[in-house]
Amino acid sequence: MNGDGVRRWSATDSSDGDQHREIRLDDGCGGGSQYPHVWLRNNCQCSLCTSTESGFRKQVIRDFRFNSKPTQLRIISNDKLYVKWDDSHESTYDLQWLLKRNFNEGQERHENQQVKWTAESFTTIFRSFKYDDVVKSDETLLKWLETLAVYGISMIKSCGLEQNRVKELAERVAFLKKTQYGETFKVEVNSDATNLAYRSTYLQLHTDLPYYEYTPGVILLHCIVQPESSGGESEVTDGLSVCDRLKEIDVDCYKTLTKVPVRWIDRGHDAGYNFHNVYVSPVICEDSYGNVKRINFSEHHRDSKFPVSVDKVHIWYDAIEKFVNIAYNEKIISTFKMKPGDILTFDNHRVLHGRKGYKGSRLLIGGYLDWDLIKSRTRVLQSQLANKHIN
Image 1 (cartoon, helix red, strand yellow):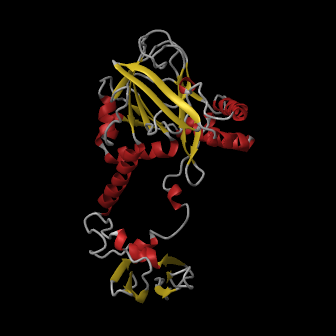
Image 2: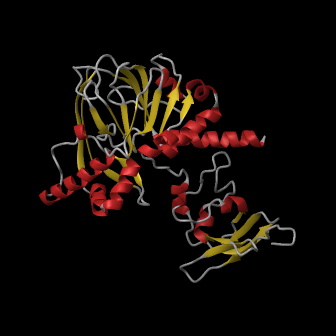
Image 3: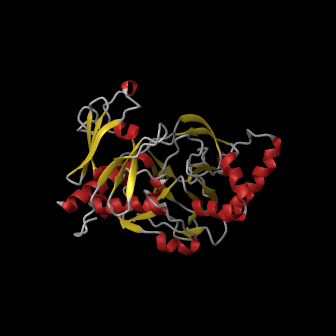
């Protein structure tokens, strides 16, 4: 860094034999980053190597030279790295572009920090948005989607009673995920249906469709009719908090629920359509960093067929007992009652939900969104709004 406080970049080839062939960038202040030759050559930004329209690689991996070496390198105008390779190919990289791609193991998991909650903190994190604001304002739409990503739950208020509101809301993001229950579905008493959610009796905590390999990411539930008397209250528990607590009190039980496979099934009919779904997966699914990415939990849909040796059965039941006790603990579980015109939205991979029994009429219109579409829409909105504020 010079006297005026500007960083002065320099580039050196810091190769150490055949194992570590890298170019090092130094900012003159003791900071720096290293970039392997093979990665730099593979990510050349020239028009021959990268599409100017999409930013995707045009290189054919079959023809790629994995052992390319730089013969020249220098910093241009203190904001670009120039490299000439041993096949005479030339590459220029914007330094800010490189710094955004600094190698840091685990950086992706910090893209959206999830905030866990319990009954004590639920009223603080349970945020509401007005339907018209979400539909008409991209800023509010983005806030809602970011709230879902961070807390896993949110309420949309003042939605009216029109039964197409779930679809309209979903179309602000992308499109609904169609399942065996249709694009949208009615949650009401239906004695002919095989789904136990279509009863007025108590509906225990669960996640939806654990018998799907690609289970829906977010659930949208629009309250149309709700009993005025007691009954029909929603129950929710943050599955991430349950997992954290279980890991604290008995890490072996936690590991059991991440490893022992469970057979999830749904067999029956709905609106004339017959189905028989089977998916095998543990209760707790982790990503490559050891973070919980999906919870499968539905007593109704856990098959009596258990694909494990008999000695693991007792171990698994001991573990699930502790999981259940935590999930239903009064310090963990939260209860509230939706009002007609509310749309409850929550992360189906994370939040366990249920409903108290009721008498009288109750009607919800439900639908699903996939997290891939939500994350895509979120990134697009973040980019568009950032550019809007710059301009």
